[in-house]
Length: 277
Ligand code: ADP
Ligand code: MG
Image (cartoon, rainbow, N blue to C red; front, side, top):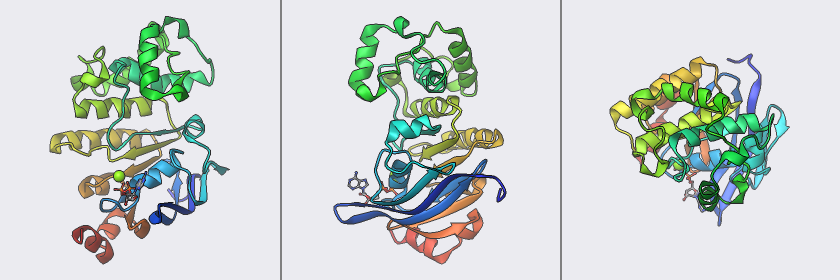
């Protein structure tokens, strides 16, 4: 993938929390269509790296460029507008919205740049208020989804089709009633439907059993085959090896090894970092 353009460039990224160096001099390039995974023990700085790139945290120093445009410190709404979608380590969905509505949010994000506030009048005010309570005013334009909007509906149905045995009968269920695995499926669907330039996934299989993990791997392989560019934080080394073009191993905020999956997992420092904790 060496010739593909760089989608994400990270240089000398640093972030401390009260003197603790959570991310310490991290640099890497992610090319279009590539999957890079970040591995490392708990507390090694993986989520902080994702939070910095997605604008949920501001770096102390360093560069983050998306297609050569600097985005470091721009804030999550701004980063999201540039076509970067993410999922969260603990699986965040909007509990007061149905599965359909959660996924439609992702599609709305894509549409809203073209046609802002389409369908706003159809969203029941009471649901809007509960959504606001849940998310804060930053997501104010989000209720601009009409479930009656045929285009959105068709697209959501297609998205759910990939998870149909799991989500097919749950489309109208409010997300707070979902199982953990179904929340995470909904979250991945919501990120994917926005057709992101870059997908950031923080431990999409955390807390999942073997068959659920295998299903996530299948989803990731589907996304990769579609040409998606993915930065994946993941603990399960077999999954990482199966999906990644490159692996970055972190420990104590630093990248201690990088390269092809087999190369990295057999690096003595990586083995030690995992076994030592
Ligand atoms: P990982 O995702 O690799 O498990 P994190 O990036 O979540 O690690 O955390 C890296 C380090 O930074 C840990 O020591 C963690 O306790 C600390 N940390 C992360 N987020 C915060 C925060 N918001 N405030 C204070 N310390 C934090
Ligand atoms: Mg983490």
